[in-house]
Length: 250
Length: 264
Image (cartoon, rainbow over all chains, first blue to last red; front, side):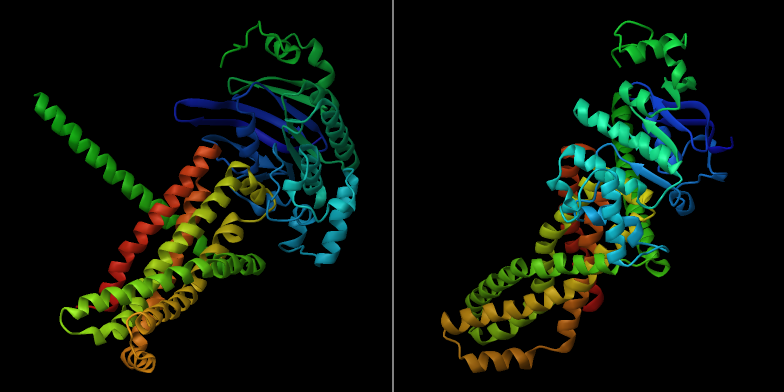
């Protein structure tokens, strides 16, 4: 399978703090990769580097064969993203958040059509048309995640990024969001990259798992293999043990 | 030896401050150029511009109007008291008019708008930065410079002269009310004196100043909000910096513009 995202020897430091230290990773078309690792290990920096929001000090990243060099509209048009906190626009009602991309740029749709499409996407994530005219502040955390998910899939992207999709949600809502993500990824056939600490998300969403530790790619393999990886770091992380090679005080 | 070390440290701290100032000015100028260079390339978010015209312009009217009304009234009392020392009380209408139109209307209006609008813009954009809404804009193929910054810069630059003009009229009205009802001026003579004395250049110079002040207010709000630090503290700091820097820049640019428009 050809690589949809190709990360080659990427290094990034902030001052004296080395965040990414030579990450090399290929993500195939249609693959669902989950990136795990402790807080501050560089997962979000890697994600933002793929998006062009952070420029690496060394190495290269290519998305669908196109090299990432900062903000690139061509690449962005292929991407949908669910942010950790939803990142919904406070000043816009829910339907305009979902249809934001459909109301701008080359593929601008008439407002009525964009609204109908937004309501369709909201239905796909289990929200009724009655929320369309509410503002994000009027929604619960779980509903905000669903709206964020609807926004991520609204323009039928080829790649979707999920940044900590279940953070701050109760276990049941986490399960609902995980199921939704898996269904959508399979249904749309998109390439998915998820960052999470939540092992239930890993098992529900992932085809493959990559663990980053100390800025390096510690382990990369199929989700079915994580319990028998033989890697002490991965083993400690997935079982949430305080004792092990990963220092508990960072 | 120790004195030399202390002196070197003193020079180094001055050097650091100067370099820091140059860096900040450079960043601000580049930020403004990035925002303005988005104007000819499009897309242009006219709906956002309309919203900002309403927020910055219409909703600032009460604060600008009240400031101008009371300032015009106080100015009339002060000029009357000062003029009385030279038996020149009759200059009240002309000095109130020229003072309001050339200086106090645009400057006080600018400062009041800086307090209201620069703070609001910085807080809004700072919150958007902290909650990743600005990153979300980028991932949705919308350039934050075009979607967020440019409409605010244009709206404030366009609407501030209108606010200043409204402030001028209300300020002169404030002077008129105090002069007629408190200082027993003749109403007709007051109006005639005001109209006869004012020149078109007096009004246009005030409007030019106001446009510059509007640009400064929006620029400082956007710049500090866009580069806001994390958390509530970061947003609070951005808001404070926006208001303080906008106010100082308004006063400094007012002097420079006055030199330019009314050379001695």
